[in-house]
Amino acid sequence: MRGYYTADEVRSAEAPLLASLPDGALMRRAAHGLATVVATELRARTGGVAGRTIRVLVGSGDNGGDALWAASMLRRRGVAATAVLLKPEKTHESGLAAFTAAGGRTATPSDDPGLPDLVIDGIVGISGRGPLRPDAAAVVDRIDAPIVSADLPSGVDPDTGAVDGPAVRAAVTVAFGALKPVHALGPAHCGRVELVDIGLPLGGAGIIALDAADVGAAWPVPGPGDDKYSQGVVGVVAGSDGYPGAGVLCTGAAVTATSGLVRYAGPCTREVLAHSPEVIATPDLAQAGRVQSWVVGPGMGTDDAARRTLRTVLESDVPVLVDADGLTLLAEDPDLVRSRTAATLLTPHAGEFARLTGKDPGPDRVASTRALAADWNVHVLLKGRATVIAEPGGRVLVNEAGGSWSATAGAGDVLAGIVGSLMAAGIAPERAAAVGARAHSLAANLAARGGGADRSAGRGTAPISAGTLLAHLRESIRVLRAGVSPEETPAAP
Image (cartoon, rainbow, N blue to C red; front, side):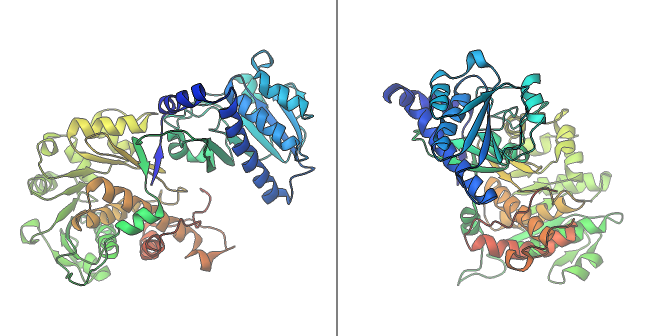
C-alpha cells in the first residue's frame, strides 16, 4: 500500500528534520538519491556513467539546489554536466558552489542545448504552481533527450496533477521522501516514479493506492467450506433491446471475477445466456431472487420503466453499484441514495459526474470526488487513467492504470460487473472499487500486449475492445494473486 502526501503535509514533515539536522543535510540526502537514479538511468540507456553528458535545468529555490548538488556528485563520477541557470540571481548558492567546484559548467537559457544523454529538471518543486514560465518553457521545448525530474515534473501541480499550460514530460521522476498526489494523478508527465528515502517522519496518508500484493490478498477465492451462495450472489440489471452488449459485458465480468453466483434481470436474457450460460437470467426484477449486491444502469435506458427499476433496486437493503444510465436517472433524484442505509457506489466518468453535480470535476479531481461522496453520502469511483475513489468519510484511494487502453466502448460495463461481484463477496465498496479497478486496468494492458508477459515480450501493443479486455481478466487476477508488482503495463497509447 502506497500513501500520497500533499505539499503541506510534506513541508510539515520536513520541518523537524530541517531544525535538527546540519544546514543542507536534508538537501544532500535528496540530491544523493537523485544522482543515484540518474546514474542508473545513464547506465541503462547508454551503457555507462563516466564520459556521459547531462544538462541541468536550474530554477530558483531548493529544487534547483537539489539538482545542482546531484550534478556535482555525478561530476565526481566523470559525468560532463552543464547547468542552465534560469534565474541566476536566485540560484541556490551552496548548490551552485558545489557544482562549480566539481568542474560543472554554467549556461544561459539561450545557449545551444547540445545533445546531452539526459536532462535533470530542477526548475520548480512542491511550492511551484501553474505552468512553466515562458523562458523555462522555451528551454524545455528545445530539449530532445530523456528528462529526469527532481521531485515532480515542473509545471504540473503537486497536489492535483493538473496541467494548465507548458510543463515538463519526464521519463523518470525522483520523489524525495514521500510520494505526492501528482505521482498518481499526473502519470503521463511523471513517467516512472522512483521514491528515495530521506528520513521524513510521515503519518497516515489521506490518499492511498493498493499494490499488487494488496489486491491479490483481497481477491475472494473459494475456501474449503464455501458454496456458490456463500461466495456472494450479485444481481445485474443492465442492457436493453438497443444495447444488449452492456448486459453481456457486465454479467460476463461478474462471472469471471468471482466464483459465486450471478443473477441477471432484464430484456437481454437470450444474449446473456449465449455468452454466459451459468448466469441465472430472468426478464424482470421481480423474478430475480435474493442477492448480496446489485449492479444497475449499464445500457438499461432512461425511460419510465428504467426509472422504476432503479428506484426498486435502491430501495433494497444490500450494497448497490450505479453506473451509466442509472447515473443519468439518479441525477434527477439524488434523494434516492442520500437516505439509503446500505452502501451505494457511483461510478461516473467526467461527463456523468457533471450531470450528477452540475459541473465538471475540474483540475482537483480528488477534492471534487470527495465533495460528491460527502454531499450524497455515497462512495464514488471517478473514472480516468488515474481512477479516484472516495468514501463519505473523506478517505481516497487511487489507481493509476499505467496506460489508457481501457478507454474503449463497453469497458465501463466490464468494470461495473467486476466491482459489483466483489461487493457481493463482502468487500467494502471503496476497497472493492480499488481492487476491481486495478484488475481491470491490468487486464486492459495485458490485452493490448496480446497475453501474459511471458507470451508477449517484444510483440508490441495494439488497440483493444471491451470484449478483449474481459477475455484477459482471469489472467489479470492470476497475476495479481501471485503478489507481484507486474511490469506488463505498456506505455500509454
